[in-house]
Length: 385
Ligand SMILES: [Zn+2]
Image 1: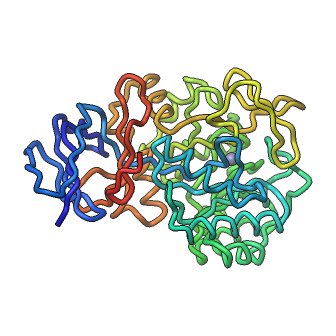
Image 2: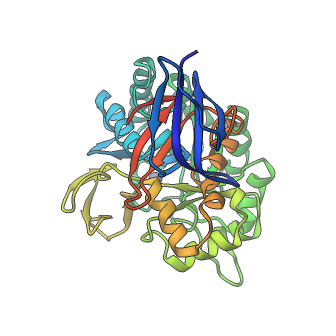
């Protein structure tokens, strides 16, 4: 059987680091990771990565777009371009994320994603959608358009999931029916997540009791920690098993907050995300509208023209990892679970994705140690970049 052999790898995997490693891939899975050299047979592919990092392919559960395209564009080409952009970032699996838009636009986005799946997902893989909204708190919209905010409605969720699977939904737990909605989501195989929320701790607990274990971009667009009402930020620190998404661009959260999160929370329950917009991979000055609101990219920051709220990021996952490593000094082998494996576990793929270990799917990213840019990306054992 033909093999792919990656040699001279500096493997970084959850709780495991090995320099000078050889990774042998057979079919789509990792057959071995060791110091032993593997002699190729005719037909085998050998890739010398020259001592660069080899990590599990990144899993981004929250990203809206790239290369001027947004997942909510009524344009079938958009998801192809976004998936191409994500692949360049070293993301091997992602959940394209919608905005708070009309039901018709959400159905159209799902249909476009279905067409990408039917085309064999030529770039990064995407098993389903992350709906960010429309069931959010109108007072915590951030850059989401308040005009399209509505109450949790499981019927609407089911209609979208009929077109293409929904894997996650960010909604405000304090809205009418918010606690029961968590249970409904889990029954449908959708991860319910508390986000764009004005909830107090007491508002969260009924949804938590119903199984909600996820927080959308922790700290951003949620109630802050106050000493008489600890809000959602306090909840994230008090409740260990809440899986908190974190945007690690050093803009959405200051360095001290990143330090606080990554040194005080259990790293098994932290997930790096990009929350990247269509302006990722674009230059300063690029302007666009998002859910009907005007946004401009300046100094790498995407902000609403009116009011100046942050609209999302231009972050790449690898840079987020580097940022947190620089700020906290936490070893990469401890941090790397937050870029892939934690996400995989929560989504039910923990035995297949997120590790550079025997038996795991060969979704891998090779990162240049100096530039932190991905120099090669493998999906299902196939070198895509
Ligand atoms: Zn978002």
